[in-house]
Length: 498
Figure (cartoon, rainbow, N blue to C red):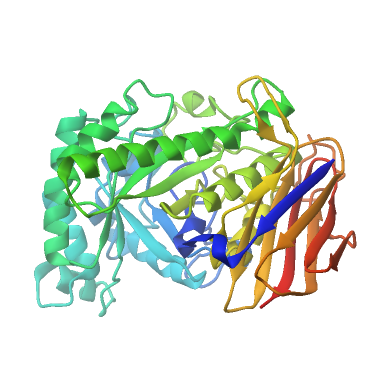
């Protein structure tokens, strides 16, 4: 099978916002407790943070992490999570029917995020709370003057503001499961007024408005139109959430589900621009795809958690090789929409749907999905080049004209390299040719691939069965990259470029 791609700096259509490679930590299951925070672990530092998890997270090069939810935020009292730990109240979390001791909170997360080189994407509670709590929270986090909440922050040991610049206005407010869910008009008005107050205190922040909970929601579409109509002038981003699974055990259809993500993004962009036209404004609303991942292996487990327990095992998908291939396709799709998708959060980071998993008092280890995310996050920086691809297609159960190779190239002028990411969806070798029209190609820096693994094989604490390896099936000939993409493979090609 032949796959031919033409690339050129002239085809550059977007600069990658580093926040495209964000992630998410929610007070859910073992994401926090037993995940990033386990004071009794032998590798915990003096603050109780697991240093093995810190090291694995650092290698993912995550620029921003959404916190503290998720559904959790809709019944969250931020004041419970700051100040002396011995004075913090224990609460019940209605969203996940768990006990929350608040021994890890805003103060600790802000510190932990910076240990791994990340900023915080903070969510405010617009479920059980509203304008006043959000006003007080941003004053606590970002105000540098002499006021009650900024002085309270100083009492808690933080003389300088946190300067959190990205904020989510609630979470999944059209979900019937959401504590304090609202109609589109109610939520849009509340988000507008909350955002106005927050931007009065810190005009430099950016605000994310909740889109619908997902493409399958009956509210999708009309919800976006209504909330944008209410809050367009106040907010900067509209959120998208979507999870993908292979319940049908249909590999061809599963690996085509990134086509669904592509359609979803294009549809929401159209809605944003329709409201822009209606309001006769020059302001463009961009997208925050702040929940995306594979989720189906553990689906339904959350409904079994009825004991109000502490740090229960919830949503702990153990990912296989085919899941890593879809993650690669989804990452490529996000890059293809980097002109409008400026923030994206892999949901989540540790234990809960995580690329990183931990054992209580034991090891931290990497799932199969860790590697494509790591490679794209580290090397998918720069200008995205519009892909002009010639490759055979196939039809699956849900999708028509699916390219056998999903591919995109990113030109990093600062580093002087052209990086191509590709998934070969087919069971044939793909002879790839990447023709550079106006970029002078030098030597191959590296060609990493994940291939040859059983599609159902997983990693574990004791054995890393799926991992990238070096390929020599590549050459540069007359400014053309020629590489063999093995059947059912994830690939990253880095080449010197001027």
